Amino acid sequence: MKKNSKKIFSLEELKKKILIEKSRGKKIVHCHGVFDLIHVGHIKHFKSAKKNGDILLVSITSDQFVNKGFGRPIFNQSLRAEVISSLECVDAVFINNFQTPINLINLIKPDIYFKGPDYQNVHKDKTKNIIKEIKSIKKIGGKVMFSKDMTFSSSNLINNHYNLHSETQKLFLKNISRKYNIDTISRAIDKIKNLNVLLIGETIIDQYIFGEVLGKSGKEPHLVMQQEKKENYLGGAAAIGNHLSSFCKKIYFSTIIGEEKDFMGFIKKTLRKNIIVNFIYKKDSPTIIKKRFIDKITNNKLLGVYNINEKKLSNKIELTLQKLIKKISKKVDLILISDYGHSLISHKTAKILLSQNKLVCLNAQVNASNTGYHSLRKYKKIDTLIINENELRHEMRDKTSDVVLLAKNLSKIFSIKILVVTRGKNGAFIIKDKLKVIHCPAFANEVVDKVGAGDAMLALISLCLKIKMPEELALFIGSLAGATAVENIGNSKFINKNELLRQIEYLIK
Image (cartoon, rainbow, N blue to C red; front, side, top):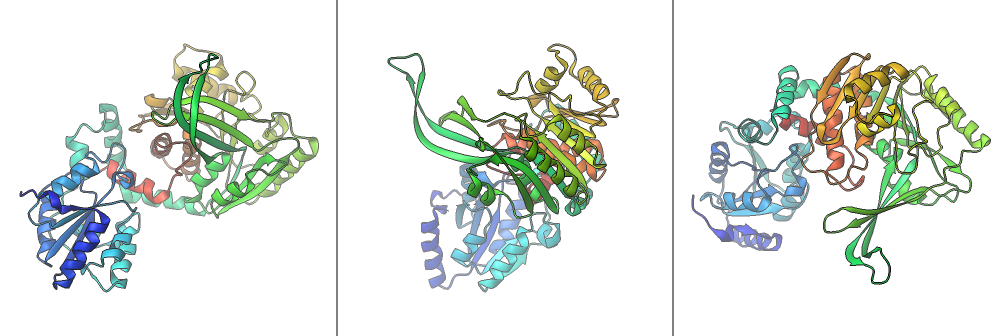
């Protein structure tokens, strides 16, 4: 390998170089990929590509858009670019800061777009990106070619020869890959697309205020922070709706906001198109805002400030909600309840929800404003409950007993058919019919923010269980959704069907 440091180009430098080479009559060949672990298959691929032209450009996916499971990429974009630039057959390397190479194709207009043989069957690409790439290259008059060299899977090599996963994760993934392949999982998830869902829960605006901590006040014993930016994220049950949106047909969303309709524009703009919303306006109340003050350096939360009116709904508004539930329940396949304990769902409303003869999935959350008051006791005979370990211990008033034993006791008390308990870094487990216990390790590579993890998990597990997916597979998929949530600030990213399938595909290779 021959290293040439001037092979790595910025976008402007690359455009100039390609323009010069084209003016000299040179044919441009373009390869694109992650190239996380360079192996003999990649080298053969690049050499084959170079035979079809004069200048070989290799663009690599930047770190932020690598979607091959947790802990990937193994090597950051700078290292990947450096390794590829050292190959003699490669003339130019570019770190692509777009989600796909389509923008780059349109800018540089290569003569040939060169892909590996595993992309020749375009329908096997879960993201459908290859179809879009082919359309783009043909539109600018270029040609798509596929190599005929032997292929090696980087993900397979990484999963089997790198310590990317713990022994517990390896054993779990080995069991999943032995029982299910990606086509089986994809077909199962595809069954979800015809489901209609009733989602009920509070809409919450998660407001993150980022700044620099200046230190202790000179006059009083409190921290001082200089605010630099503020970001709003759609939280609460509204976030669950967005998680559901790329998987199922329609989501009928009944939710509560303030009577002044504050944040209405933001809520409508952020909710996905297949979510049909019924807003309930609470008198003398704001739309729930949960402000979190964040240290911009560490992303650590310094302080939370909630703006909530937790008084009960008026009889008139509660009756309106109950009529909506009865009406919409006739149109849906399952009911998802996300009860944040802010007075939206009364005992009577809970009873009506559970009497609709539909699969009911519940996430009843304990938080700073409802600790000691919020309880599951208004819910009986729940089909599926998702709860974290702290909430479980709070409900059972027990800090020290074995968590599985507590979960079994909770299942008996509330006649829960399927109980999912999340345990942070210790993963999650599922109990079916108060007896069968299945454990799943945590898959998050880095915990950035725990807000919204339970919501993402509720969304995916509920859908999977409705189509009677095996519990271990449903738990795995739900755990991946939760892991995606905790690796991002707030609800800045929602679960996407194609991206999830891509993660699964690379994890079980």
